[in-house]
Picture 1 (spheres, chains in turn yellow, cyan):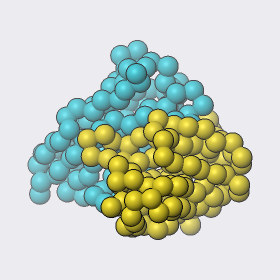
Picture 2: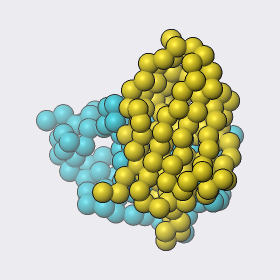
Picture 3: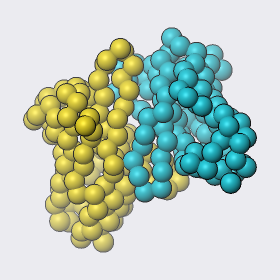
Picture 4: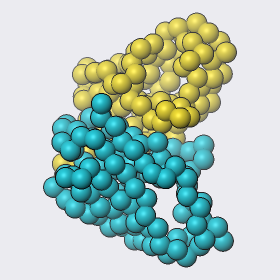
Amino acid sequence: EAQVTQNPRYLITVTGKKLTVTCSQNMNHEYMSWYRQDPGLGLRQIYYSMNVEVTDKGDVPEGYKVSRKEKRNFPLILESPSPNQTSLYFCASSFEGTGDYEQYFGPGTRLTVT
Amino acid sequence: KQEVTQIPAALSVPEGENLVLNCSFTDSAIYNLQWFRQDPGKGLTSLLLIQSSQREQTSGRLNASLDKSSGRSTLYIAASQPGDSATYLCARSLQGAQKLVFGQGTRLTINP
């Protein structure tokens, strides 16, 4: 089944403890992104990647890191999480296909930082 | 600033009605516009994608239109059903389509 998977789905952690949220897609998509969703602010892009070893900042990259060492994986790293990073995180992938770059989203990771 | 606005924020209608959800955007240099559905606590499901060269797309009871000159897109839902209850999000992308900018969504409730 074609899908985007994220792990963990739920995570509660403490301020300053490094964490990684994994994202993997099995559709051989070139493009991958991370978004966060917050009440009243909607979905905002954190980082995106156009291919292996090619990443760029989105709208809210502060406090996050990403890497793209393999085409299928795009982990999101929080080196020193803070409470303002409590949010619902989504990974997405897309490909050029017929030129439309339709985006496919993972199920989300709900992160709480205390 | 490249913004996307969805009005209304919430909508409640009886089952069977036809309805229209609105999405407006400030930048006419749009690459594509995508409509998503989000159920509570769940991820986003892509419903329809309209490329900038297209004016509308249809899937079943759903029809989405795009008017770049006025900066508007609409999602038409025919013969609404309780299972259509969800939050509907529109998102537009610029050239390269790497970055989606989302609206805040319309929370739709269909009453049996």
